[in-house]
Length: 274
Length: 262
Image (cartoon, rainbow over all chains, first blue to last red; front, side, top):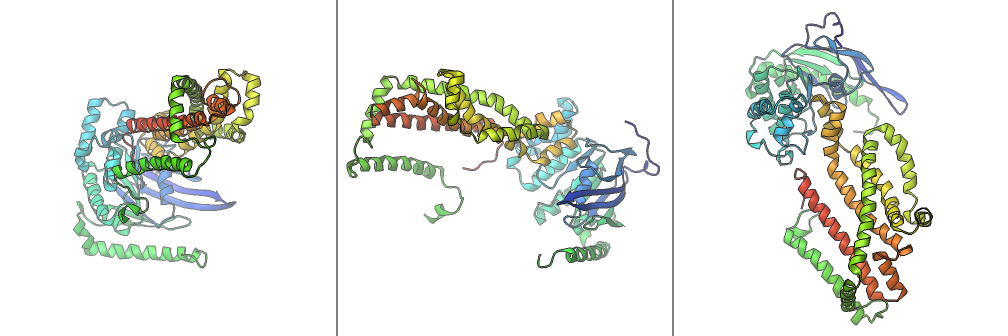
């Protein structure tokens, strides 16, 4: 299976090369993603910002191996990706805890598949329960958790599996504004502790700056990467940083980029709608 | 008062129970009124008391064995249909090739009423137990398979994808995610189809049988014994509600993780 590494991509944790995704809709060919190329370094926190329907979820699903690209490649550690695997963990926007398993059993799901013995599983799960602050809920079923708690467990479940890269598809999109802030801070805390490579997709401008080392701005229909913006904010970050001058300037700059896109997208809509 | 009339809002369990009991009490009341005030002839509507007496008489004279034989036919036909239908439905729900092969065929059979098969089943299986069981099987099998397929297909794709990103292989996804996620829906389908099985066993017994609750009703009809017919019909209702409650209790026991109202 060891495929020869393509030149120039071996230094990256993740490399996406000229990725395009087309699909047929009512006999028309629709281009969802076009010419996407991006890089994620080891330990880097990369965010992708884009409007709804720009294909950012599709991009993440292709990287996860859950969907196929029409053309282009994805390399992880220099190796071509074919199909899903535990090296790329994923957290979804919808609540995906297995409802018939307790919080503990959910977190150890991947560990059980790997055949890790019970005692070691227990240690790992306890560690992550501690990090997400839900040790008291270890034996609860997901039905008794709030939305924010469910997503915390989903993050712990993905991390417990020790993936090389964590893919996050608008994981806080379904949460209310306050809970979302708490979750962002928690995720940063977790990232500080684990230094996991993260690729995080969202349509929230503040979220993208607050979390990321690098922000990719995506266009809609077809989805292209419009800009790559480094975030010059120091770490560790706290919520106060959202009021800093650098943060606000960056926000203005990104909002300008987005506004252009939104206008373009709106002008493409049929008249009399929206 | 008004707080109990909000749309789709839970009410106290005691109130729920009282209302359910009240419905049965009202039914009895109107029944009695129909006899005493409405002057309906007893050959059409026997008074509740007469039906109760007939029930006591029949209980001492074969009602129990009729229940037993009908119960046996229902259970056997139901278990056979479930034994074949559940695995087949799961297969069709999880593999598109299986769906493409079986679904149109089964949907075609589904529209043929089981009662239309009765003369044929008599030729094929004679008039013994196998024939009654065959009618029950034909009556529920096709519906059951298609419903199980539906339940399986309705397992959220995100749950399946999550399992893949956690390193599960297709067979592990099937066993550890698809099956447990579909199980409550499968149990519910079985509960509904068991009710239908009772309908078909009675149909079969009305046509060609010399035992069972359907036969009891048919025989009472021949003798113009309306109270006995009432006993037969009501017994089926009681058995049905017992089966339903047993299934619901079993589900609560098996799936403590389910989110449910009430």
